[in-house]
Length: 499
Image (cartoon, rainbow, N blue to C red; front, side):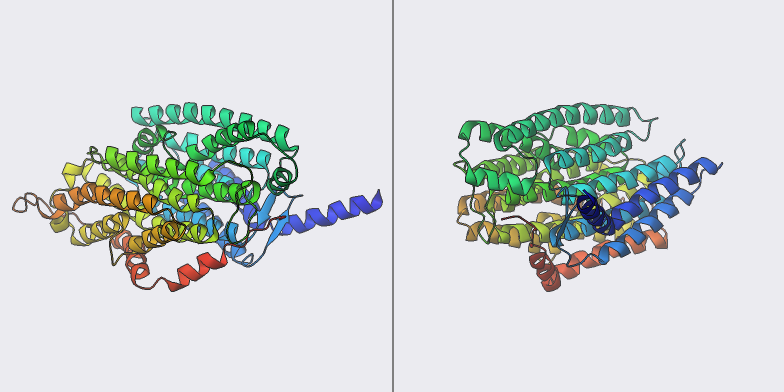
C-alpha cells in the first residue's frame, strides 16, 4: 500500500512539473479576475496582466522543447507535436491581446474588459489541454473548457444584436455536436473497454470488432472534431459567429481553435485508428483515407463557392477559413508523417496571414465603422502601407508565390500527390483558383475602383503599423526562406504512443 502511494505521489509530482505552462494560465486567470474586481475604473490593467501571463507561459513552454512523456496516468501527453501546436496557439493569443488594445468596439464599449481577458486566458487553457489530450473523456472536458469561454466571448459585445444571435447559435450547435460526440465515445468505450487512445488502438488490433458499430462510433466522434474546425457539413455556425463576435475573438477562433481541433484529430487517428510508423496503416476495414478526403473536398468547395457571394469582410474571411480547413484536411487524409508535417507548416503560416487579414479588417472597421467590402475602395491610396499589407495577406491566403501561403499549399499538395491521391490535389488546385476571385475583389477595390475619388487619407498610429509589419514581414520571408520552419515541423512528428 505504501509503495503504491509512493509511486502515485512520484508520478503526480512528475506530471505537475510538466504542467507549469497550464498552471501559469490558471494563475493568470485568477489574478486577472481579482485585478478586475479590485479596480474601480475601466483600464488596460487586465490586458497587461494577461499579456504578461501569456509571455511567462511561453517561457515555461520553451523548457519543454524535446520532451516526450505522458502525464497524469495517460490523460495528457507532452511531446514535440503538442509543443508545436501550443506554441502556435500561444502566439495567436498574444497577438490577439495586442489587437485588443486598439480595438474600438472593445475599448469604447460600455463594459469592463477584465472578464474579456480572463475568458481569453480560459480559452487558451482549454486549447492547451486539447492539444495533448490522450483520453476520450479528457478530450471531451478540454473541448468543453474551450467552448464555454468561446460561447461567452462570441457574444461579449452585449449591446450588439448580432453578437447575441451569434452566441446563441454557437451554443446550440455546440451542444448538439458535443452530445453526438459523447455518444460516439461511449460506443467506442463499449467496443474496446478503454478510453485511452493508445489502448484503444491496441484493443482494435488484438480483438475482433464489428465494422459497422466501429464506423458509426468514429463518425460520431468525428462530428465533434469537425465542428471545432468548421468542416462541412458542421460549419453552419461559423459565418454568423465570425460576423457577430468582436473581430479579435473571430481572429482567435479562426486560428487557435482550429489548431487545437486539428491537433486532437491527428492524435486520435495516429494513436487510436492506425498503427503508427512512417505509413499509418489503418486498423480495421474502414477506409479513413476516403472518408476524410470526401470531408476535405466538401469543406474547401463549399467554403470557396459561398465566399464568392460575400460582401462583408468578416463573413468572406469566415468562409475562407472553412476552405482552408478543407486544404488542411487534404493533408490529414494522407494519414502519414509527411501529411502531418504539411499540416504543421500550413498552420504556422496560416496563423500569420489570417491574423494579419483580420487585424486590418479591425483597423479599417474602427476608422470607417463598416466591414463592407465597398468601403475598401481606394484604401491602397488612402493608407498605402495598410493596402500593401492586406494585399500581401490575401495573396498569401490564395497560395501564390513568393508568399508563405504558397509554401504551405506546396507542402500539402506534395504530400497528397506522393500518397497517390492526385484527384484530391487537382480538386485542391481548382479550389485555390476559385478563391483567387474573391480575394482579388478586395485588391481591385483598393487599387482599381474610383481611383480619382480616393477620399481622405486614413492615418494609423506607429504601434498599429508596427504590429501589421510584425505579421506581414514573416509572411513574405517564409515564402523565400522556409527551411527552419520545415525542419521544426518534421522534428515535431514524434508522438508518444504505446505502439
